[in-house]
Image (tube, rainbow, N blue to C red; front, side, top):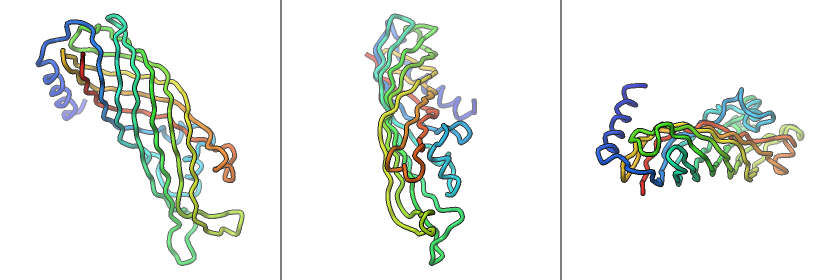
Length: 235
């Protein structure tokens, strides 16, 4: 762990553990602040729209990584188990240009792609040291339901019509389900908690009719890793 991360971890632990240690299992209302990293090009589903677009547009898939905020309700199921239900939000807009085409006036052919994710997760966690320990490592998993919206807007090249350039927008949205796995470390006091968590979600969905003129099989991969800090109110 780098020096800055160690200092931050120590500060959170000191803040939380400065009060009394939890005397019994408690419910927690968690607020999360983190960073969502999309799956890399080599790990994305077949016919993924971002991978397909990279064949003729200039951008990096990692540019779709985005900040994430969320909220989660955690309920103890005895001393060593905990159920959770929560949701988070991330959005990112990425500009791009065609790699091998320019407009007749010599300017770039520009467009933007926007991905918005609102995943809800229903999870169960195992706490090996128990709910009453002031230091609580945990592992868990469950089901994720991702509400998503993907759009492209700007200038495009019509490869079927002598490479004519036109302006348009393409939008698709929906819901997709998939597994969620997570692990983290929480420092728990009587009134509040704080910690760090790593979470992985896996889901994908078809883009549907609006994108069918490009490729009827186009999909969007919604999977990725979330690295986040957690701050909880305990009651």
